[in-house]
Image (cartoon, rainbow, N blue to C red):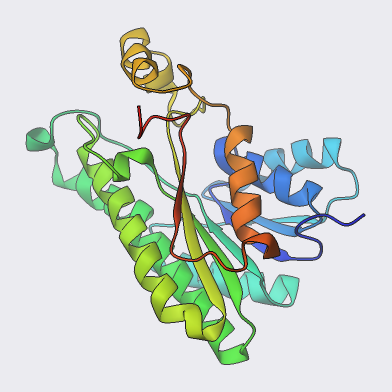
Amino acid sequence: MGGKLDGKRSLITGASRGIGEAIAAAFAREGARVLIASRKADGLEAAAARIRESQPEVEIRTRACHMGKPEQVEALAEFAFAELGGLDVLVNNAATNPYFGPMLDLERAAWDKTIEVNLLGPFELCRQVARRWVDAGSGGAVVNVSSVLGMRAAPLQGIYGMTKAALISMTRTLAVELAPSGIRVNAIAPGLVDTRFASVLVGTPDIVKVFTDHTAQKRYAQPEEMAGAVVFLASDEASHITGHTLSVDGGYCIA
């Protein structure tokens, strides 16, 4: 029996570890042909090796790309279409969060870096990929990885939350504009996830308690728990879903 993503040519950014690697592994299990991207080539190769170890038959490629550099983003899109002979699914997962503190103390450098990686990069990659889909008349699916901090106040993580809120807005607008071309655009909004990216939060008991006390399931998540939602939104099972942001947060936003 085939997987939910059989043969789908897929590009996943920020996939050298954490949520991105978990998504890539899940895509591989569901039969996708996978290209993973991240800033450092050695991290990508290590992630690809881990996925191949458990799935020897997987077709997985790597490409280093700094999402804050538009010329590298454009080159990534060109590489994906050339290397895979086209693209069916784009997952924008790459992100950064260099500043933790009050917004009034935010410095311009941290502002610029967060905007460039979390918002400009995903937008430019969406645009590069979608233009090719429109020109080819092929359609496709985009899944953006936002955050619950883009859906409510984000104390001490204000600029990160702002970019994730903008990503949700971008998802909705692109969904409307691109629907006539057969392109679906959705997002997921993870809560607190046990990754190196969130290690400062997960490693601080007071912060964990604040989060889990306000979460219906009273716990934080593992990266693999994000992957199923992305597989679903990328698959044909979600063919009538676009412009939606799916909270994958254990009930944080409702509790």
